[in-house]
Image (cartoon, rainbow, N blue to C red; front, side, top):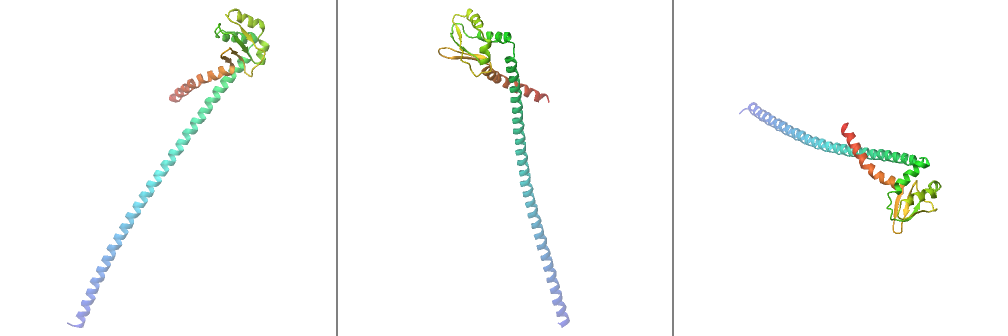
Length: 198
């Protein structure tokens, strides 16, 4: 074998080996690039899923807060409406002319069983309005007597009858509280009906 032939053989083998190294390096590079792509895709998918979950949780929290705030505002408005209506009703009753106011008190006193005797307590203004003639007229139709007590109460109007064993409360304060408990469910029902019509 000649040197030229040996040289060509060595160069040929080196070239084949170099091509093989390049192919192997290229395959390794592609494998690493594909693995890196897959890893990046997996990481980006995980990141996107986490972000999507976080955004969804944030939206649900925000929506929950909005709903709670809406309900609280609606409750506040409802309470303000009820308070306003009841305050106007009390003011209207308080400003009734004496004869109309006394007719209302007479009607409430008619609800007190006539076999109960007791003392009638009123506020300072009503102590001036309710005369002994008025009390005598009330007692005329009763089996027992009611006596007007000169000690006044801090009530908006109406009266409290104190018997030997208990009190019967027809004060405007208590009547308004009772009316409020009646109005709240009715207003709730009205508001629900209004909301379904929207």
